[in-house]
Amino acid sequence: MLFLTTLAWGVGFPVAKLGINYIPLFTYAFLRFFITSILFSIILIVKYKHVLRDIKENFFILSLMALSGFTAYNFFYLYSLKMTLVSNSALIVAFNPALTALIAAVVLKEKINFLMIAGIVISLLGVLFIISHGSMELIEKLEFNIGDLSMIAATFLWAVYSVAGKIAMRKLPFLEATGIAVILGTIYLAPFALLENGNKNLLSYPAIAWASVVYMSIFATFFGFSVWYKGIERFGAAKTSIFVNLVPVFGAAASSILLHEKITISAIIGGLLVITGVLITNRARV
Image (cartoon, rainbow, N blue to C red; front, side, top):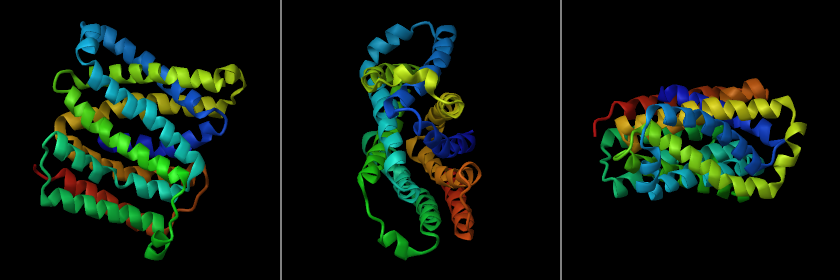
């Protein structure tokens, strides 16, 4: 399920980029999570009896999840897609597992053993191989712009989101915590979307833009985020986060199909390294 989640997120890179070509960033993020909020609201109403009480008792940690994983993260993520190179974004995202493991070790006291470190290093090398086309010289020449800095911020926020979710799930079921966080994140996005005035042009957005929003709402968010937190609940934040390194692999494949980008031998070799690293870390015992 985590494998399928990263597949959905990888495909989401070119899909989201197609959408934000027509829809302003905050408006796009709001529409995405508004649809997801409706789906989660149905589940919360049917499955959980004390949602309002749970929100009141856990408001701070749920708000931290909402702001880090939905509101702020998606602005920086979408902004980076507009402003930076795909190779730069892939490199920065690859550091997320190590960052998540570090925060989890400090905040949650999760242990990191040698096998997990080896898996992280191997998968990171795989991503580096993909984005550098097998040439270290290209990595050395990378220049960071405002889009790269935006992805750094998004990567940090994702790590905070993963750890905050683990804390919330000490008191709440993973599905309830995720659903509430999505709804709160949508509420926090609303004022920014209104300031963009993107809602005035909703009927003018082409079908491809709406298809992008629907895909990101159902597959990348409703399915993806639910499974992600189930993984954190079962395996821990550090171990689950290693799957993030599969996202650039799937993103490259999806880009070749949707954006007609060429898949190179170095991308295939790097993809195999990433998958190997994920499998090694997944077998680790902590």
